[in-house]
Image (cartoon, rainbow, N blue to C red; front, side):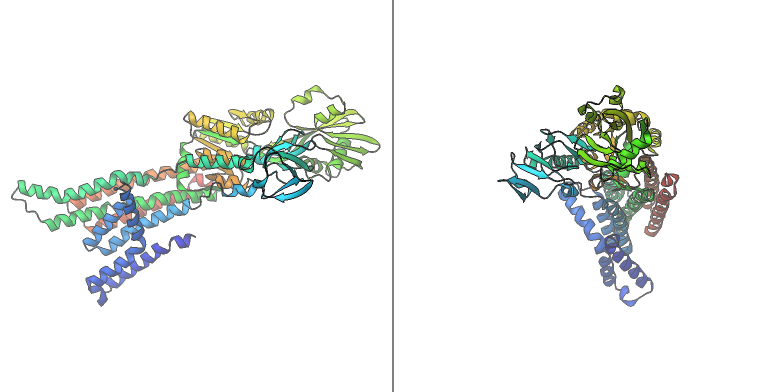
Length: 624
């Protein structure tokens, strides 16, 4: 891909070098000005035609004074005064700079393309007592569909069968599968986890939960306009000023000669100086050093496990004042672990429950069996109670393990304080009496607390957590990380409203998330940051910045890299413009000739490029 992008500049460069070499070597054919001109026009075309076309299109759209027009005029001016190599070099420098910027932009993605991959392609509908596999869009509200364990629900509806547990993380980001009672709503995108579910469809496919998320991403993407590059804004002022000064270079001496008869006006001399002025005015150092600085910033961030999908996002992160986090998989590991076992005989309790859960693929079951290790128990008559838990017989004793609702259903009394525990509880009973509980939690990542501290140092004044998990658990994580606010029990629509509210207050917001459900807010926020190592493909594709290592502290590292890059860009702009203005003044006075100006311009460009490469080796490039 990168090689293909450089094909035209490389061809132009080879022809330019060959032409200069042949002319300097005194090759006979190059003593003919027409042959020489034709050769350098040939070298000019690969890099010049595209820019000239852009200049024409901008002019047709009433943007006459674009950077494309400046490049075109400077190149034509160089050809007119016979400086053919410079005419090619002007455009070549510009195209190399633009190609570097395009390489950064090409890392961008189609915001919504992969979302449809999460939408089931078929649905099993019950018609005339038979199961028929059809496309979801052909199912009408009122019909009943069937979803097997492990399958994704294709359409919104009401649960018509018994209570069933569903993995809702694709929609809510909630870490624990949710038990949905018969008669309650089931949304497209959920996954049945423990039993076959029959669902009475309430909405057509075009209005399903997945379709609504898709529309939100599309709308958010349209509202987020790409950042305009500085050089384009600069050219709107710089280009007309330069063209006016070049025209005045010819006109003012003529007017002066009328007023002062002792002053001899030579049109050719002043026209030549005006063209030299135009050539000198070509901001090569700017057009190559600015995109190169951003490219260097992207490279330095990439080495640190941070992917910016374009130079504009490097600039955008420097304006952030608010960071909003998803919880599960972003600040927390997204993996359950047993944090506490309470009971009179904890070894027997954990061994028995682990034996009951041994054949389950549920995340909680896996956490308990992993914690039990070598502790084993013999169980029989294991029965799964969807939405409640499990029962089994061990050593002649009847065991219950599951939610507090299971104990309530079986009329088993338990300590009242268990209701206020925010973490996930597996409550246990033996022969109708409370026996203890197993406490599980989705633990914080090692650097979550440090990430919040580092963001404070970066000038982030507000941090929130938005999550589909219950409010008590979100409050606990917010307190542990010292985040300002935690908001739980949110669906994607709630997260979108929260981001819109913050933006309505004039805040520049970054959202950091990892789930499919985060796609709308990632697209809507000023900067969307995805945790890419473990995150959903949809979140990664929709985001503007991807943290490839899944460390939340990298968000602060991304902001530091953006600020360092912006600082280098400002240094290059100040230096390049200062030197350029000086050389243009010397050219007007006839002190600087064309090749002296070219040498100075190349020198400025080289220094700007070297300054840009400092981004690779700065301390922020190595932040962990």
